[in-house]
Image (cartoon, rainbow, N blue to C red; front, side, top):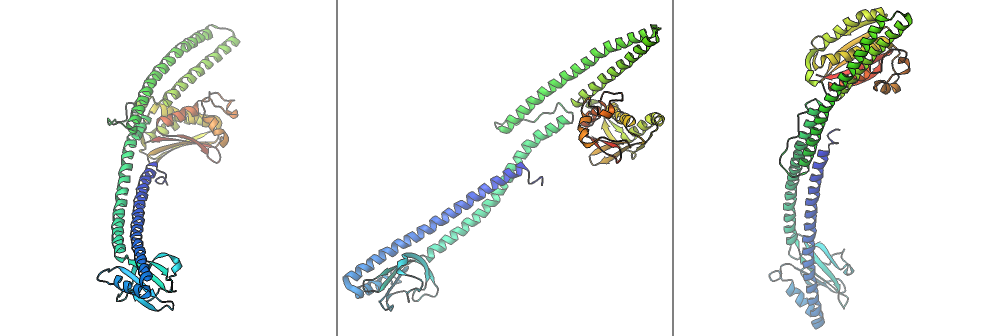
Amino acid sequence: MRVTRSTTLRFAALIFFLQLIGGAGVLLTVRQLTRAEITGDAQTYAERLRDDLLGAWRQGGQAGLAAMADARSDPDRLPRSAILVIDPQGRFVAGNLAAWPPTLDPEDGATTIDLFRIGGEESERMRVIATHLPDGGRLLTGHVIEGELHVASVMEGAMLAALALGVILAGLAAWAAAQMIERRLNATVATAEAIAAGDLDKRVPLHDADDAFEALAHSVNHMLDRITMLMGELKIATDGLAHDLRSPLTRLRAMLEKALTASQDPEAREMVARSIEEGDRLLAMLDTALRITRAEAGLGREAFHRTDVSALLVDMAEVYGPLAEERGFTIEADAPDGLTAPVHRELLGQAIANLIDNALKYGRGRIHLAARAEGEMLAITVADDGPGIPVDRRGEALRRFGRLDAARSESGAGLGLSLAAAAARLHGGTLELGDNNPGLVVRLTIGR
């Protein structure tokens, strides 16, 4: 199905069919013109012959007509003449045709027909004209075109063979044109895929040509230069923002801790402690938001290292085991040994931790971690036995700062799933929410 939808294939097919239609059109035109010329010349000859014979009738009556008819049908002098004169009773008078064709009427005018000439063994194609004679008899004059039609048929066969060769050449030309376009476009596609994979230095190769493909390559490269510059500015801005905001928040937290130590009023101490918690929460939100922004911008691929994802899941299950047990959960990891992939270990670990944390907050019963290889991808799933998320609310849950009604009673900022989705995209995969029947299963895929 993908092949039939290919624009390149359609372009090649268009070239092929245009050349095929053009060749067929030329062949049909030549055939019609050739046959029209042959029959036209033969009809002109038949008309002159008729006029001469009618002149002989006017001068010498039937005897004069018969004498000229016999002379003009002499095969040695005029080998391609066809003449027949019959009297009013339909009896043969003169000529080289034995009998009047039963299907031919003098009112038909000029026509092309197959007839036997006297002494001939095979019928011949000829152009004839039927004429009424003044005494009630009839005159048939014509010109044999069998030889010309045979030559025309041979020529048509040669042209048909040339058309068949032209069809093959048209197919080769269409294939070559499609391959040329495919190669030029594949270079652009490969560059786009490399950029998406994190190689921001990749550019479309130039060929020093003056065509639309070269213009496209220049435009894409200019766009990529601009994107690279903006990405660098984004990195500088996000790093600066993180530093500028963390410093005052850290100082604020330090002052609050001093105030907590210095205060003797229990109510004041409680309010300061809550302020410290909110400050910590704000710092965590800032750190997570910056992580998401950097991941969505493709920053961090330089920190990719081949990692044992199976071991990572086991470690996450062990780390969260005590907390899960305290909250009445069981947590287990199921992954075959040796599942490795190039990943940003810290970011992927944070993404999985966020998914486990969500399961502890909103799920119940059992939390199941699993990893499986799926072709070129590796799928990590975190499933729980809780109420799950309705299908029509899952898009909202994946949005940054998106929190469903059931989640508003829990601490958090609605960034856990957003960070996991950004981490999946940074690793060339996706994040999907599904049904665990009952519960929610979150499926995070990464490239291997």
